[in-house]
Image 1 (cartoon, rainbow, N blue to C red):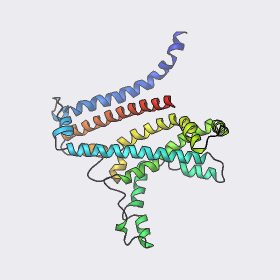
Image 2 (cartoon, rainbow, N blue to C red):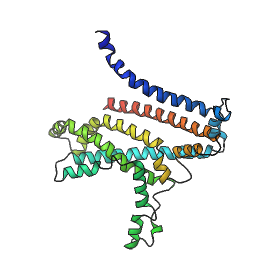
Image 3 (cartoon, helix red, strand yellow):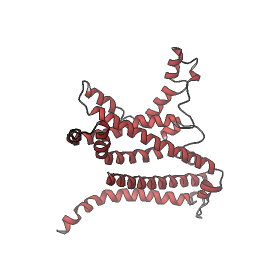
Image 4 (cartoon, one colour):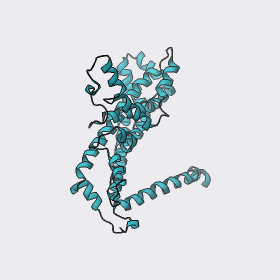
Length: 292
């Protein structure tokens, strides 16, 4: 094997990887320095862990951080799980042959290019206590007044945020699952059916192991995105507890420039948590696939 044959792929990837590493690594390095208090423009050049101590342990922002972390984890896990379940069900239906399949597939995928901020505003207009659904139910007498409609958006559990993420991410995962199913065909299922497997057994032991790698890869992307997303929780979230991305933005917009140190510390914590959870998720998924 010649030198070019051995190193052709790394050499061709080097320019792109260099840009990614420099931009991401440089931003991460600069952000880490800022989280340690390094802000030479305002005269702060001494490095310390005060920001992390204020956020994690014994500062005025400690409760806000931990409550925000719990909410962020809940929203991310719930959004990813519900999106995956809906994606599997939708893909299994859309792979069938029926009248209007093209229209159904188009309607399932049409919201993919819609920005998340538009989806969040749509959820706000529909599900708020002054929204279209509450007013419609009040008009037909289901509820006495619009303010009797259950609080779905800007609630402490993040239900509206989850609805917005699921509406956007379920089609994304569904496209992945549908592509895998269409590439595999139905030979494996026909073989299992001929051996006496019922519908649940065919799904559990044939379909699920085949779609699991693609589904898990997409789920990792969805989880990482929802964990760090800002615009949706900013529109649909409450003032307390806030998701971590919204808390970080509040520190960055504080007139006191020293507050940016805490904001950058939270950003570093978010990055570390996402990386750790992604690695754990991938390790568990590989283990599950090997067991299957």
